[in-house]
Length: 251
Image 1 (cartoon, rainbow, N blue to C red):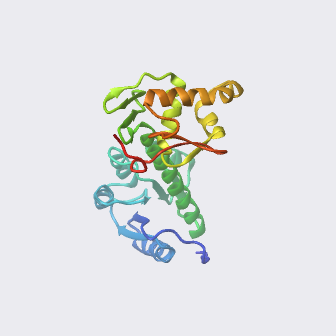
Image 2 (cartoon, rainbow, N blue to C red; image 1 turned 90 degrees about the vertical axis):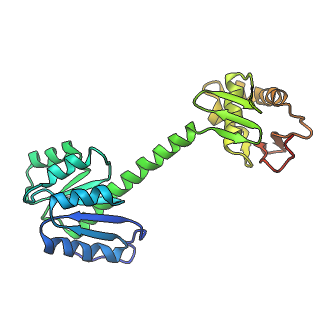
Image 3 (cartoon, helix red, strand yellow; image 1 turned 180 degrees about the horizontal axis):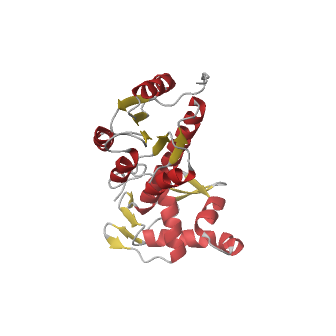
């Protein structure tokens, strides 16, 4: 098995489960991965591995296919009923039909047991990275749907509705999009360019010329005084900013 370098590290919170009836190989993998910062648990039969996988909070699972009793395919099939934890499958069989079967059941990647530790590490990192990016994208989608509140102002992205103190605001589509973009960046300046990229779907030049008109209309509907705004303030030479609650008295 090949060696490691000093930069081959991951956060210590990355927990792995290895399910393999080859106890010697499982211990070798644990001894290789733990110095890199992984926390590794070992289980040596399918049924116990499934139970551990369902109960433990693991970042990824390394799962042997060929085990007596409940084999790896059966473990994975049951696991996928309730969990999308990344699974890297190991097998003594390198035939393409076996690899395809594992991927169809829900494996994230597949390695024959002729692998080097460096290859295992590269594959493991790849499935962890994909899992992280998927979770990050889902969190971003959830954030997009979350209700945004700034003082008495409330914006519901799913319903495309905005209210102040429970009273609905009648906004044009562009006004709504601008208000939401500013509210999501409360306390931070939004340049004209940023608003153009977030709000204008087509005619950028025309929208750029009318952006001040839209802001003026928004302020009127919000009951804002441009000289002393509660919500949208102009940052000279920069753009616009939604004021943070508490930076102004909310009446």
